[in-house]
Length: 165
Image 1 (cartoon, one colour):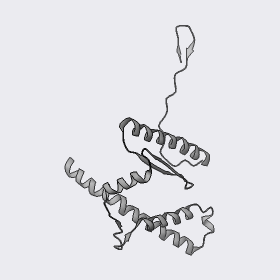
Image 2 (cartoon, helix red, strand yellow):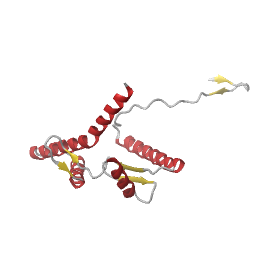
Image 3 (cartoon, one colour):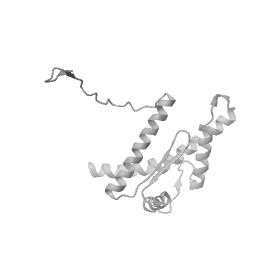
Image 4 (cartoon, helix red, strand yellow):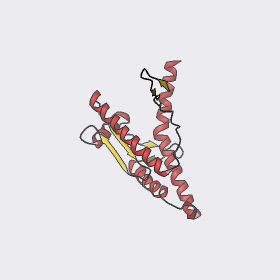
């Protein structure tokens, strides 16, 4: 504390510390943090759309599976269609492990099953065959996700690596 010209002491302002990026264990704190951060994220998306005249779409799924969405244009579907036209025109993800293709309806059904299993309260009470089924579903979803997201980034990273070096 520093003395002021009037003889009183002023308190120094506290600075925000760095937030450790790890899962918040306390359920109430986690929900509060989710709510605040979601609001901030949506505010930033809105500001980006207004200030920069950008077309912005934002999807957020809570841990409970609730969907929150923001779209700067008339509908989020319009933005998603535009994204699909630009990113991968009429391509389906290919699973390199067995050579099969997976459509968006397959992915949606897998997501629904994963959501169901993730919301089970007592995983310890599940039978072995149910756990095996759950494991297979999660592994399938993981491989599909990797084939749709990681592999394109790796190819782009290789291009940038050649450019930078």
